[in-house]
Image (cartoon, rainbow, N blue to C red; front, side):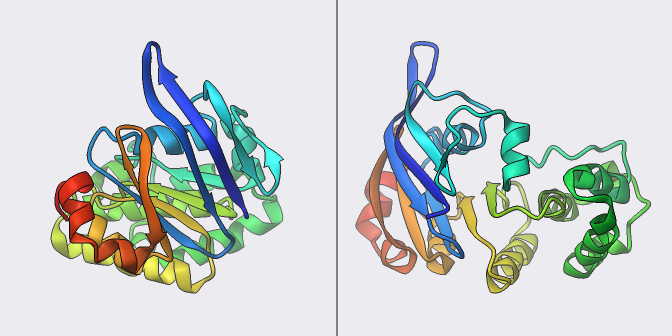
Length: 235
């Protein structure tokens, strides 16, 4: 397993946001984490990459205990998070955003990484010198993903990649997921469009009030209407 989360508990002061959560991701898998707002999904991703320090439990990445490790060190290990609402540098150009993200890549490889991002995201290639603040929501989301991919992560974590996007752009993001999966990338994705993301995932977990309440193959979970009615609150 590339990622093993074992009985992870994370608190915000007196509030326990995650209650002994366990999950795993194997190399090459696309794993979906779904659940209602406030379930603890973003807290889980933040705990995995080191943005939050868990109170109990452990996070192991490629067999190494990285619980509470420095986020920059985790990036160097190959953990890359695309956060909710993207958080790109709006005052920098598209190319500058990518070059900054590629600072951890050996200098001899940076040009090739930039060229690869231009091929994977052709819309960004046409806006290389445009300030990121002028991008549409869909273009900005693609930039956020490209920025994470610049450091050639072993595990890509996506937090709500379709949040706030028009339906046609949501289709583009799901096409991108298909492309990344076809490349053999390992992905853990949090997404509110639960049934859709589960239908394309290898496996899935349902999180509610900080606890895993169901797990299984993606298509199996996507087809359980009882699960959505009880825990997720619709598709």
